[in-house]
Amino acid sequence: MTQYSFPDNFLWGAATSATQTEGSIAHDGKSDNIWDFWFKQCPNKFHDGVGPTVTSDFYQQYHNDIQLMRKLNFNSFRTSLSWSRLMPDGENINPQAVDFYNDVIDDLLLAGIEPIINLFHFDMPMHLQNKGGWENPSIIEAFSHYAQTAFELFGDRVKRFTTFNEPIVPVEMGYLNTYHYPAVVDMKRAVTVAYHSMLASAKAIEAFKELNTDGEIGIILNLTPSYPRSERKEDQQAAHIADLFYNRSFLDPSVYGYYPKDLIDLLDQYQLLPERVDGDEALLKANTVDFLGVNYYQPRRVKHRDEPIDETILTPESFFSYYQDPQRRMNPYRGWEIYERGLYDIAMRIKAEYNNIPWYVSENGMGVSAEERFMNDEGMIEDDYRIEFYQEHLKWLHLAIDEGANCFGFHTWTFIDNWSWLNAYKNRYGFYRLDLTTQERSLKKSGLWYSDVAKRNGFSY
Ligand code: BG6
Image (tube, rainbow, N blue to C red; front, side):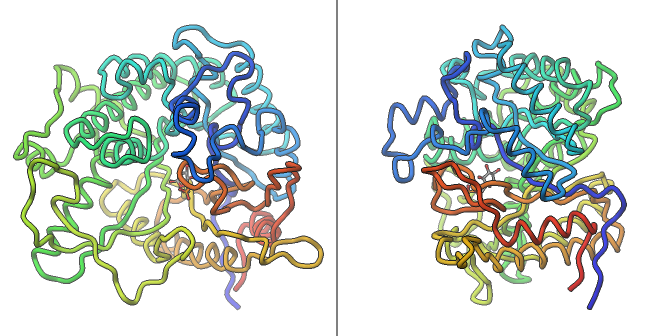
C-alpha cells in the first residue's frame, strides 16, 4: 500500500454556484438573471423542463448544509455570489442579500470551513444583459463596482475571492453555440465577450488591490490540455490553436497580463480583433491574479482540419478538428473523456510556463445518471466509480506536487447533487444525493470516503 499524503493546510472541500443551489429566485428582492429570464421565456429549452427554480434550496437550507459539510471534514468551500441578488438593479445593495451572504460566511467560519467566494458563475443580471451584457464595454465598470461592493462587504472574513468561474463558458455556450442565453453564433461577438470579461476581471483585481487587505484574488479557469493526434506538424499546430483559444486566451492575460502574440495575429488575420481603447493594455498588465483555480474534467484531442475554412461562419473549430482516440475511456453519462493524467500535465505546465503560480483544483468530478441503481439496502448509493475517479486524479496530483507543483487544494464538483445548466438533474455529481420531492439529503459512499481523505489529509491505496 502506498500512502498519498498532501501538504500541510491543503484545502479539501467542494465547489458550487449560486444559481445552481440557492433557489428562491424571486425572493427577498432578487432580480432575474439570464437563467431566470430564459426559463420563464422558454422552459422547453431546459432538460426535462427543469430550471433554476428547482434546487437544493441553499438560500433556506444553508445552515443545515454547512453542518453536513462539517461532517465531511471540509476545511473549505467555494460558491458564488448572485450578482442579481446582491445588487438587483446594479446600483443599490440589497440588505436581505447581505444578511444571507453574511450568515453563510459566518456559519462557514464557525464550522472551520474557509469560504472561497467567486463573483461570476454564468449568471448575468438580466437588466445588464438587456444592455448587451459582456458585449457592452460599460460592463467592465459595472462588474468592478459589484466586485468592490462584495470586497467591502465580505472581505474582512473572506480571504480568497475569485473574479470568474470558467469565463470561456459564456463565450462558447452563449456566442459560439446556442446553449446559454443569448444563444447566438457569432465569433466576432464571442471575442468581444471574452475580451471584456478579461478587462472586467483585471478591473476587479485593481479594486481589490486598492483595498489593501490581507486577502488574495484569483480566477477559476477550466483548463483542457490539447493533445495532438500525431507528431505531424499540422496536428501539432491544430493543438496549439485549440490551446490558444480555449486555455491561453484567459490564462495568459490572467497570469502574465497580456495575450499570446499568436492569438492576436490569428484574430487579426480574420478581422476578429475586438475594439481596444487606450489603457486596456496597462490595466491587464498591472492586475494579474494571485492564484489560479483549475477546473479539470477532460482534455481535448485534436487534429489538423482538412476542410477549407468557411469565413462566413467562423468558430474556433474552423482552425482544427476533434478526433476520438480509440483507447480513450469515457464517462458514458456525460460523454466526457476520463483522463486523469491530464491533471498532472496541467500542473507541470503551470510550474514550467506560468511561474509556478499557486493554484488549486477548483473542480473535478463525475456526473452519473440514474444513481439510484447503486443504492444498497440501507439507502446509501455505493458510487465506487466516483471514489475511483477521485482517487486516480489525486494520485496524479500527488505526483505533480512531489515534483514541485504549487497546488494548495482539491475541491470536488460537488457537495449535494445540484441543478445543471444543460442537464438539470440527469447527471448527479454530489457527495449527498438530493431527493427532489422531499429535499432529503443522503450521504453517498464517496462522501464517506472523502471525509476520511479530508481528515487524514490523504489516503492509502
Ligand atoms: C463546470 C461548471 O464546468 O462543470 C459547473 O463550473 C457545471 O457549473 C459543472 O455544473 C458540471 O457540468 P454539467 O454540465 O455536467 O453540469
